[in-house]
Amino acid sequence: NAGVTQTPKFQVLKTGQSMTLQCAQDMNHNSMYWYRQDPGMGLRLIYYSASEGTTDKGEVPNGYNVSRLNKREFSLRLESAAPSQTSVYFCASKVSAEGYTFGSGTRLTVV
Amino acid sequence: QQPVQSPQAVILREGEDAVINCSSSKALYSVHWYRQKHGEAPVFLMILLKGGEQKGHEKISASFNEKKQQSSLYLTASQLSYSGTYFCGTGPYSGAGSYQLTFGKGTKLSVIP
Image (cartoon, rainbow over all chains, first blue to last red; front, side, top):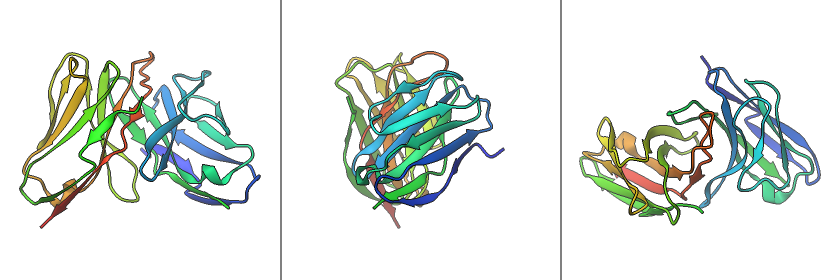
């Protein structure tokens, strides 16, 4: 039982490049989330998906897109990376009345 | 609106107690508490739902005061393993088991021998 798996763990991009962060969970959870974490800022919600087939914007969605491919997978895409998107990205999933289970994170640097 | 946590940082000796506070300017429906160790993902500690209940997890417990729109996390007889950054998350229930959590900036707890 792997929980929430994120790939890649580390990535360096040049400004303007695109990439997709992958997230998969094997806990049969309905809800999935993408957060970014910056020093001194805490965790900020980018996008979330309450159930398969639905996605909604969070607090900081600009510059990102998401796809809920199926119940297991929720991907985050950066179409044209900017230095301001340098951050640690966490995917999480959740079942009712319990807390989030976070993936191990993707450390992204945009140069 | 991001909940406000206090203190920002605290240093304890093993065996001492600590309280971490989380307050919100918005009405609280639920409060989640997480602990994150350096370089790792946050780990869920507990959730408190509207109703003022207090929950416990080993020597860590929490309270939720809806009227004051705040929650407090209590760590008693601290152990070295309690070191890390503690986050509270607040937000409404939006159906299908989904909470849109907004997290505080965190409280860094260091426990020393």
